[in-house]
Amino acid sequence: MQRNIHGGLAAVAAAMLIPGFALADDLPKRLDTPSSAAVRHAVGGTSPSSLPDETGTLDITEKMGNLLSTAKETGEVMRLWADWKAGKKDAVPEIFALAKNGNDRARNLAGYMLDNGEGVKQDSKAAAAYFQSAATDLPLAKYNLGVLYFYGRGVRKDEGKAMALFKESAINAGVEQACVQLALYYLRNKNENDAYKWANEGSNRGNVKAFYLLGRILYQRGQFQAAWPWIQKAANASEPNAPAVMSLMYRDGKGVGKNTMMAAAWWMIYGAMNRKQIGNNLTTVSAFGLSEDEQRRAINFANNWIATHGPDKRISYQKTLIQTD
Image (tube, rainbow, N blue to C red; front, side):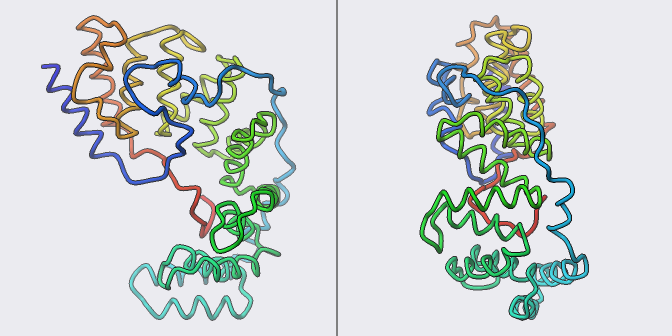
């Protein structure tokens, strides 16, 4: 009976997983049981550290209109994009004609198409030129140009310039992906004060990755009750790393009542979402010291959760954007 349940978990997990980009520093290297090393990988730090009180949001609201200042122009460009996606090949030269005539949204779209090789030959150097020409008046183009500088794609790698462009696109247009890029950058560079600020900004815009990052920082800080709702929100939105922290919090009774059965269930969900083959045996579940009944309930919970939640929200922050979500 237990072997069949495990097989169901593995099958459902395999069906729901989709190709995507995961940050290696967000994931434990192996999945057996939540070891100390796994804890550090899952929450992104070795010990809680001091962070400022909750930061107020940046003065962005009045600037949001900059992204779509001319609805007519935007509609025309997106209509042509939809035409090309529907198979109308003549839409591509029309997009580039609009870009040549100074339509910044068309320039941004042309840059996206060149960077991603959609409808045209892939050419990130040419994409950078289009993004640069649109960046003066279109904050989203600044974000896209920042992506190219951050990864050194089509331009010389320059993380400082990338962060400046991300900040401008976040402040001038509330580009939520820019907030996440900034939070991740500052986390990697051990600047948790600024990481917290930008994760908070991204969370205010409903970004699922930002929910996880904000909860993760609060967890590191030792503010477990404050971390819990953000981690829970991220996990329920299928953010792929949040279930690991959910498991740790249930296991240790931090921010939520201690519950080893739920800790085991969430660790299995984490493994399934991240392609770990935990559905083939009882190694992971038994490591939590559960009774046979608790093991069965943990597996059932994991099965049901995977069956009722959509594909994980694993998006590539290496990709440039056509528009914000």
